[in-house]
Image (tube, rainbow, N blue to C red; front, top):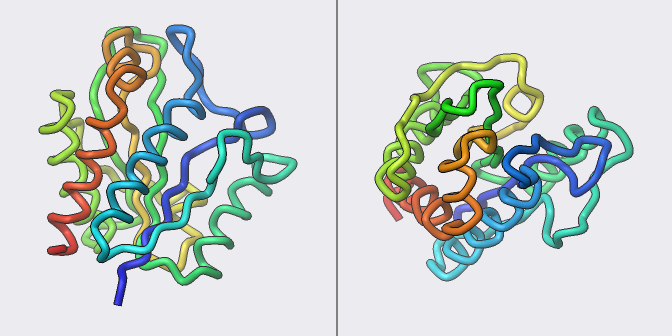
Length: 187
């Protein structure tokens, strides 16, 4: 039986719920592309079924921030996903802030362990510093999903080098997340 992975490409193409911007780039565009590439890798494996929150670049989810989050979570819950992975880019007023990090609802947990595997492989694949896993109980997509959920910050859109890497080499990010999922699931 295939493992069902829900890939949530964080944010909408336009407000409400558009993402961070930096270095002339938009979060929602970077995570859309990385999510599509991750879905392709998972589908090619044969052991996974995949659903994307944004199957097309112009998929707009909800008419408010709260509704956008609720619809993503309810779609994953209704589909019966085994794992929920939400893709984001980080942002900071300090342009030198760099690296990857991820969040889970609790520790110890399946999600926390999955996130550790994803971060290890993502750091290996991209060369970005692993800032580690953290617990965040206030994030809706971690709190309201019925399955283990990880929110991954792929790099800082406000850091010129992180941003360039996400734009020019999205496959490295998709590959890292994919390898982390394989490590965790043993597939």
